[in-house]
Image 1 (cartoon, one colour):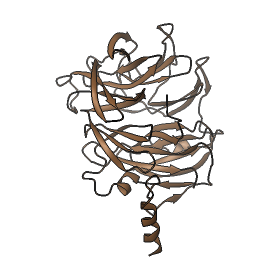
Image 2 (cartoon, one colour):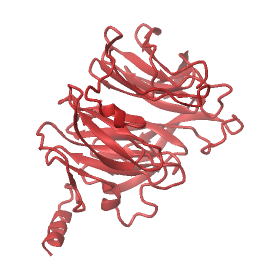
Image 3 (cartoon, rainbow, N blue to C red):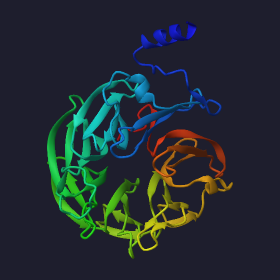
Image 4 (tube, rainbow, N blue to C red):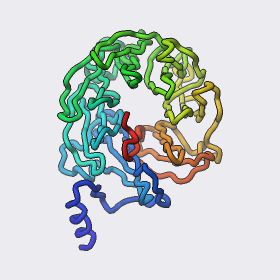
Length: 379
């Protein structure tokens, strides 16, 4: 009875989360401007098991399946395949790829506010009151022969009304995007046509919302991160055969590629001048995954400064390194393990010394992070 009363009391306060009483105590509380982080678990295609977890730094507790707890009556729950997550203003946005929508929630309570219908949506960024979302445009494809491939686009969404107000056509199968000096840079992958991958970044002028340039970079682009000097760090998946994955540095002010890291990349996170790069690269030639790597590069010098940031041997327990984030204040490293992609994954927290601080079970295929705090995600 006391537990029910506590939950009802909390439910009356709209700005505070209403958590199920199954939080996992993880660590001692930490009091900084960062209140916590959300972790979007992708889950497998056609499983309708995408989910959101939450870690509360102020209590040191972790909450699994928080979207389901806060939106119990929502049909089909969060949806099918979580692909990106972000915070802008008072809203939390989750890009749900195969469900063809961006789910919009209150950033503090995770209560559903609505959805934005965008087919085969991929990644999201925010600027000047708008959300910009990449879309493959056509249906989700499972046979990658190019037969159903079509030009993708970036949708411009009014964050006040959640309406798509414009679209800008770009390359085939656009993935992550970044915003620098009034321009949107979009990584085109061409992933539905492995015989003819894309190799360009599309440049969109925000003021006119028109594509103004295509910049050749490398095959099958995926991630793009901008540092404070206007350099884009762009990941290429390669072709899974002789051309492996890599990271390229493109200077938006000099308008040219200024370097490459010559390292495998599966995911990466930019924190200040440090680029954290993880990989468990798949090779069609070897028909399997190569040895996992955990590296840190200095973006000022493009030099490798840490060849293996896990120092206590915990990496021997990690099957498939998948998602990564770095707390911008404490510099703790958050790393996820997707295991075999069909069972719940695992989240690890490492200190700056590379030693494990804690780890716990997540949803299926834990992948995408966003930190909760005052204005830390604003641009």
